[in-house]
Image 1 (cartoon, rainbow, N blue to C red):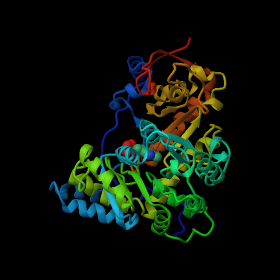
Image 2: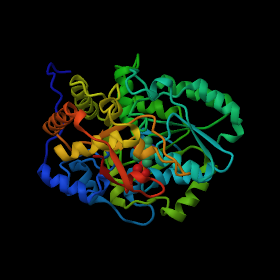
Image 3: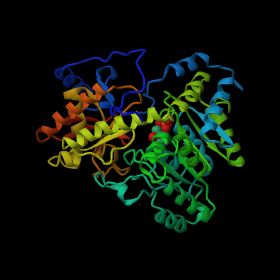
Length: 459
Ligand SMILES: *Cc1c(COP(=O)(O)O)cnc(C)c1O
């Protein structure tokens, strides 16, 4: 390393997209017409959009060049072969099946291996993964370590699987009912926390004990590999590509959303070594996604993914990526704003329950905080708390286990001054937290209410 401490954005800007500054009064009016639901806003009215890091990354000049080069042949396109070679350079699975998103890969995989009576263990299922497991009638079980369930508990690998609980779960349900074990890297629903190679090896041993396949939900594999390099003893001098290879060598297959660590705006894939499963998956692919050499994607998308996948494992990029998320989180922690710690890879999670103890869970402290960040600064985050998880199929409502507001960082999109602005706004709102009021829901659908519910501030 050079002697300079400042970590810069390892790119320069060659195409700009203006963001629109609005006033507090304008944003208040937008909030009223959106029913205080940030999903109902027009994105043009958002200054800093931290709703998600999925599909929102900025593509490189080389990716845009790939878009031009994209070959749209129905079968056997050169773009497909470039995609396949790029995936294989990191994940040498025998079968690679392209899909339009990660959830399409999940849908196909669990249609083949799931079904009533089956049980799928994971460190923490992402919501689409859980939904696709459950849709087949199978049960989705989350087995993250105890530390991973508490926002302020420090642990270098809070995404790790509890291997004893995994072993007990497999024995309780009988191995024949467990089609595969899954590990999500990094653990998105658990705060973007990484999984260590040591843990992945221990999970592999449990799987071998019962003859079970192990799959990665690999959406943020590169961010996970960077955390291993930084935090796991013995890996400081191992390259990220080598760490990714070691992760891949421990598993039998993967699902992937190219909207995350392939820095593309759309895409995904399913990969595995098993011939019989792959054949059944390809048959389903043809029904719902497309021919096996393009899946649900245009040739140009395959090119963008092929290139993005090589850029995402560059260490200068990963150093900047993980440091810039930590820069935001650590500044907030230093200012006394309660956050999930340590800071994860792709997002900072504000702990609204700790910041707004005067607002009870059923008055939605996370929603109140998310609304205040938009009203005061035009920042759009996402409530991950009782609005998202509190309502049950029988119509009853209970508090979620945590009341979080996620500020997800799109890849290569915002600069340090944008992040400094976010810090200033969050601090300002946090200093006035006692003035915030709860919210009530005036209208909601029976399921997935966070997308469309309408709210009103409590007086
Ligand atoms: C985003 C995501 C998915 C689903 O991928 P989509 O491309 O959004 O369909 C699955 N698992 C994890 C961990 C994710 O973050």
